Amino acid sequence: MIDAPRLLREEEAAWRSIGEGFGLIPDARFEEPSLTPEGWSPKDAMFHVAGWTDDCARQLDRMRLGSFVAAEETRETIERQNRAWFEVSYGMDPAEVRSRFADSRRRMVDAFTALVVALGEATPEAAEWFEESGALHYAKHVDDLRSFVEAVSA
Image 1 (tube, rainbow, N blue to C red):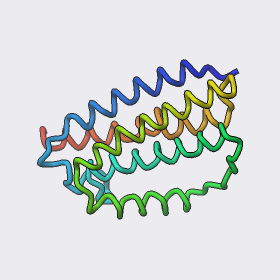
Image 2 (cartoon, rainbow, N blue to C red):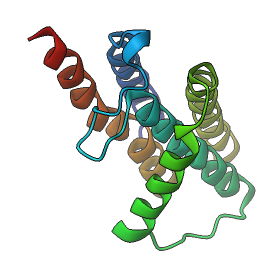
Image 3 (tube, rainbow, N blue to C red):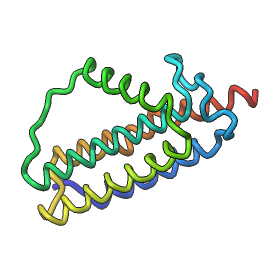
């Protein structure tokens, strides 16, 4: 049986960590395209995370409603989606990106909670989506954010 409360606690802790990481970025550097070797800015990374949490919320809702169809995700399809989100985020207002970041995360947590309530437990597939889009994904970006800030401080 999947421990949904543990997954929610881990997501909350990881959310605080990534939020603290983004909080270290001065507004003047939020759109600086040097967070990653690919030229992402902190704003792009924030929108990227929002994109995946929003997608996760949609998938969890489909699971709860019984209309989920698993699609094969490959490295190529994931990279294609990441590039598409990068293109969208490039021209977005930072305030809108910050708002989407918070809203999409809230939708994901609400969708996971609703699924657990409706089904009486988290399914393995729901848990995997929630972890991969949430806590595990956030952790991948925290180090980038810290390195970005440390590079200027050094």
